[in-house]
Length: 229
Image (cartoon, rainbow, N blue to C red; front, side, top):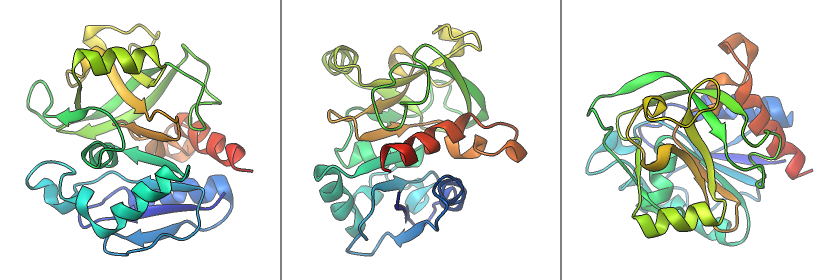
């Protein structure tokens, strides 16, 4: 599998995800600057976490109009897998690649801690190695992670099985006290209609090596590699 990571001014998790991908693929990850106007031939594009353009205007709103995002959208339309993590999720919603928006956290504070997620579907190249209903532990680090969509959109996402992860307790119970940011229906990650674009607020790349304190994120990256053998 050949993967590329998009780098914006303010990205700060680009190297983290590049390292996780290199471990999983056994080959270097291509780093692509936001002002580039072409993508290499890749199987996966990752839009990483961080604070693109300093989070001015609205998180992800400026980055969504960077020259490279035209190519990311074209690649996604052609079936290339796209993963947006944290700020990357915000960018993908602003670019129209995923439904919904990310708003300020319910308590209007930046949150940085580990959370538990319940896996809602294994029907995607990202989640195929997780057990449906199982729990994983990923870190979060965001101030605008409150996922919102209208009820019609939420019902459609639910009906099409496009909710990938929900905030949950360690036992896998989806409960209000497990929701760190106020996200609608505890949603932490969603898929596109063709299931080849995933956006999620938690950071799998930050728990993709035992030296980091856990390997729950490794499963996601290894699943992608197997999907594109």
